[in-house]
Amino acid sequence: MKRKRGWFFYPLIIVALLLCAIPAHADIPTMPHAFYGTLTVGGSAAAVGTVVTAKVGGVECGSITTTVEGQYGGSGAFDEKLAVTGEIANGATIYFYVGGSEANETYPFSSGDVTELDLTAEPPGDDTTPPSVTITALTPDPTNDNTPTFTGTATDTQSSISSVQYKVDTGGWTAATASDGAFNSLSEGYTFTTTALADGAHTVYVRATDSATNTTTEANYATDSFTVDTAAPSVTSTSPEADATGVAVSTAVSVTFSEAMKASTITTGSFTLDGVSGSVAYDSGTYTATFTPSANLAESTTYTATLSTAITDAAGNPLASAYPWSFTTTDVTPGDATGDGLVDARDITKVERIIAGLDAATPGADATQDGLIDARDITMVERIIAGLE
Image (tube, rainbow, N blue to C red; front, side):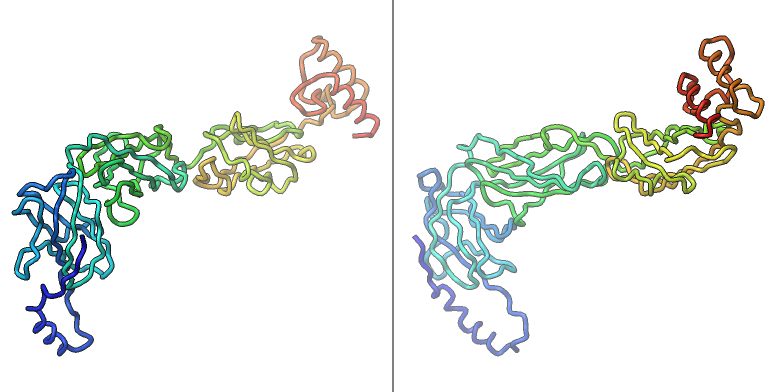
């Protein structure tokens, strides 16, 4: 039963008239919205001593204790009523709570009104079912942001959600924020942002409490752990090694990283070799990037390979700084297996003997400069003699 009775505030008419004399720009305080009516809990009249409270936006803004069974407040002009007061905007929804349980009824705030509103609720003790919590989103990707934000929903089948809390790993519980600004209904959205987390694996736990004080704890994010990675990747090895000499002119230049890298960031623009043209490939299984020159390098020449900070790991963390290293190519003429400064038929015979295991290998015998001495080197020597190479 709902009725509004403006006569409750007849004694305030004089005050209202006086307020008319206040300049238009003056701040006029919000007047209370008063309530009274019957009070039923679990289908029965509420007992004397039952506390009825009102909340707006999750903030308590009024309470009254029953002195008559099944009734809160009175209809008389001077009877005590549940006064809802504070800096409340007209139209804001008022939620009522009876002995800790959320009432079935709500009402829009209206400054200065008196409303007869019958309230009904279920006993808190009848609710033994804890609420559930779920995670609906995690942003941004925690692998490259150490303060991820979680959003989710807490739901209860009987009592309203009164709070949601979270913790990271073995830390303490911290209150989450209701998406709509206040925990009032049976299903509430929530959000929270963790403090800065150290690199490594973490687990976030979320629990909800309802007005019947049942709680549940649940590990979020697939009920599993997630990993924070904000550390810069590093180089673990290079080929050729830094300051290496006698490097074959046909060599490919490679570098191995400390972790998985983002292949799209490893290009001929971010992995260079002194202006030498070529191609770049990345092997995700070994974390190795390889620069292959489009032609043999010059003999007896020092080259510098450089990795730029445009190269990032899979989480998006760039190299801490550019990474250069140098090496020097061999001064041996490819195909000069005898080491006499000439490439002729005698070198073919020398390569054949090396392959047959009759002679020790020589630097020039590796005519193809691929690090091996085999039949292909014989063919290469023949081509060099013929002027084809």
